[in-house]
Image (cartoon, rainbow, N blue to C red):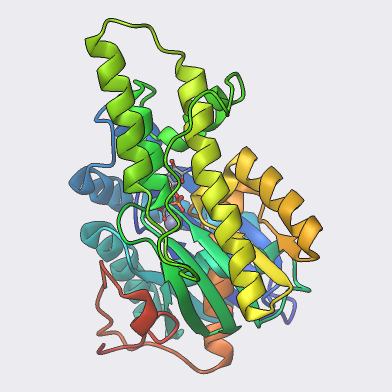
Length: 349
Ligand code: KG4
Ligand code: ZN
């Protein structure tokens, strides 16, 4: 039932989640279906791109049907079709965009191409409609670590980015060496609760004065070298202490740089985004730092931090309001550059 509401469909298939949501009037989530492939990829210790694509291909019609059924609407009721066009795995992105184009062609409804990271940031609006640009965002996902100035719903400026590993990537690599399996972030988060965060002083990299860029490969390598050298000496290590100390080092840098960004820009609203925003230590310590500095902190519920269709629907709703539709010749953009393209994605580019 449409009830005069403006309905946005959001389709996300950039990695290992097949996710589709229906959003009403840019604020009321009618459905948010997520089919995760995590268990399938766990066997391989990471996402296998071709397997991910095949599972999207198999799952997407059912995820779509369930999203419409739960929202109690049909395709004809939908006003625009939002889909992630990049960045992400090429084959995985192709599954979502090809499906979205089919829907657009069959229904005559407009297509909206969404930047995945833009979606992660705007996921904050699902539970916090009072949050309005401009504001500051810290994006921490498996592939991205960025401090972003959100100037408008479709206008983003990157203030700092990682020069090597993304935070989630560092978590996943350290977890692998600790023998915790994939995905590593949640496992380190859980194990760290049993360890001493001050047991080891792993490297914190701040780069040049006033730089809002990040670097996590030194911290990651320090942990891996420590584990190897202890192993060679035949010494037992407390994996919980290593997990807690690694997390402490990473969160120190994320909190300090975010507070520095707030100081330099003068923004009083900070939003977290991306899978690593699920991290309990980051959520807790960032909240404490923001309280101290008088900054309002927004963090989505965990289901809206990791990949989901609702965030794509939210971004698509705002792009549609500004008339930023895509044509049916829309391509996919696996390594979509954030500084240049974020929020400016449209057909033929
Ligand atoms: O945003 P996301 O779902 O996918 C990407 O766009 O990359 O983020 C996935 C990343 C993975 O690296 C995963 O290990 C990390 O988020 N992650 C966490 C936690 N939950 C997920 N990292 C640290 N602590 C967590 N609780
Ligand atoms: Zn993501």
